[in-house]
Image 1 (tube, rainbow, N blue to C red):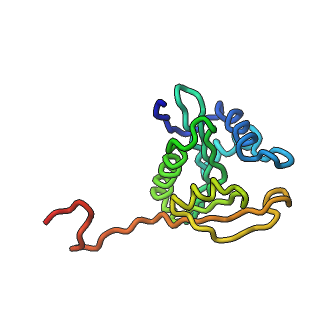
Image 2: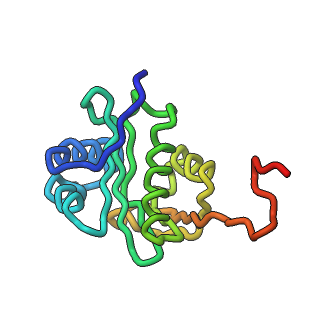
Length: 167
């Protein structure tokens, strides 16, 4: 498999991202909340990053994260089933964390369906922890799990050994 290119989404990506959201994230829920117009609005928003992962100009994954003063909120993340378990989701999270750190963000939060055990495991492996259960979060039908991760990195104090440092 070719390695994906990660880049900021453009308005031309909005429809395809919305369709992926509908069939990979919002499946089984009434209505369609992340429709093309909402995705396009997120792409244009100054406080939101919409990341696209493409292989040979084909969208295989995306993520939408809103940036606050000290917290980032990961609204959506999806990878096409044909490309799952290849590290693409992890790479998108790492990309977003770097952007968040540069913006002074210290924490990333997200919500996901409580019965989405694969996603819960994925985020736990990345260091997220479950902080709350929210009954009825999804259209008053499904419970959400809120997860959070402190992304600040420890900076060694003067005189302390750093990894790879020799005396």
